[in-house]
Picture 1 (cartoon, rainbow, N blue to C red):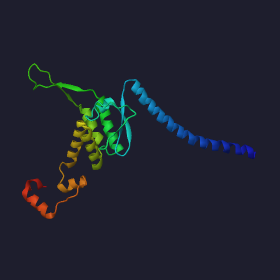
Picture 2: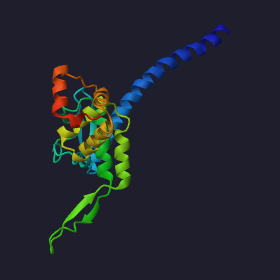
Picture 3: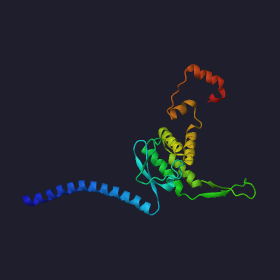
Picture 4: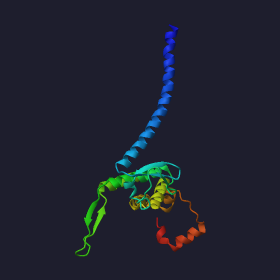
Length: 211
């Protein structure tokens, strides 16, 4: 009976070791699967590039989505080549940038004719749909001042003008209707003016200090 009771214990022990090994194997399988997906995309004609944030986080993005960046547009690097982005501070910021690019690359372009164009000439522009504008606002909704600053720096560095506009509009909305001190508090800004400097500025630009 004791031997019989001992048998399941041995099996459970093997099961625990097997579970640990299984986790490692699953991680390896996931990694290999990810590589396989990227290789399949390459074979299918969907080229990808690998980007790295300043804190070492790496992410793959399709070359089509990367075209939204003036810096990355036309990049000939393969998926195995890591492109460092020193002005993209964190992996979180890089994820937000990539999310924006993927979404906008997938959206159909809305064309319109410019009525101010000279007769006989054709001028076609593009507009962002209202749904996409709402999506853009939601993307930056809830970001802290620090996160917004990192995203602003990244968008400016990568030359993604649409994202830059979205971030600037969000910053403007955060400032609107606030006093000087409230703006300082919102963006963690230190007042480096002496009382004498501030008094002089208030006298010279009294209109700007009406709160």
